[in-house]
Every structure is written in structure tokens, then in C-alpha cells.
Length: 125
Image (tube, rainbow, N blue to C red; front, top):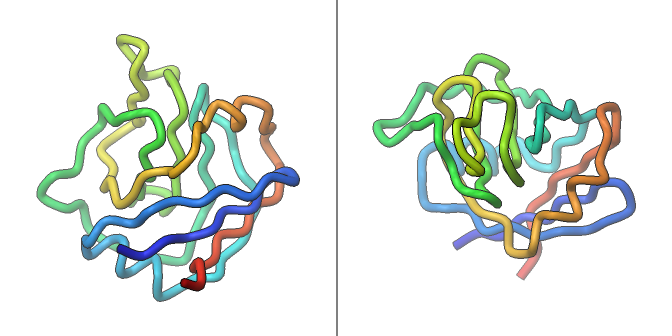
């Protein structure tokens, strides 16, 4: 499985990508950078990838999931409830392709504010 490195607000985190078409599409455009938006306990930023929803796309996700939101298109990191949540689990605004998971505790992302700079790159073995 491919690993990626996420640099955000002076923190460096890693994530593991799943073997999915979305993960493959995102890997092709790395490294990518931008400014994040915060929506509840989710951060996301626009990426230059056009993918369709996969068969297993869903709105309710797990803490630490990486999601691709086709309407953005955006790279999303879920770390807790969002305004769309009906429980303590994260819920996307609309279905996302879950393409990976964070390797560390994502509670550190609660400190991130909209406008923060993010850079995502493949992690060299």
C-alpha cells in the first residue's frame, strides 16, 4: 500500500492509501498543495482530479478517513463530527470516495483553521 505525507500547520502526518481508482488518480497528481477549509471536524481543499463516485461511496465515514468529494473536487480529512453528522461520527456533506486512512491520531487537526497551507506528497519508502 502506498503511503503519503501530509504537511499542515507545522505538523507532518502520514496516511495509507487503499488500492482504489480514486487513490490511484490522486497519486498521479502528487505533490499537491493548497489552502484548507474547515467544516466542523473535517478539513478539505480543492485538488485537480476528476473522478466519479465509486460503488462504495458513502456519507458516513470514520475518524481518520481520507475522502474524495467529486463536487469539489476536494481532498477531505475527517477527524470528528461535521455539521451533517447525526452522531459522534463524521458525515460528509454528500457521498465521498474513501480512499485512505490517517496513520496517527487526528485530534491534532482540531487546531487547524481555514486558510492553513497544506501539502500532500507521496512518501518515499
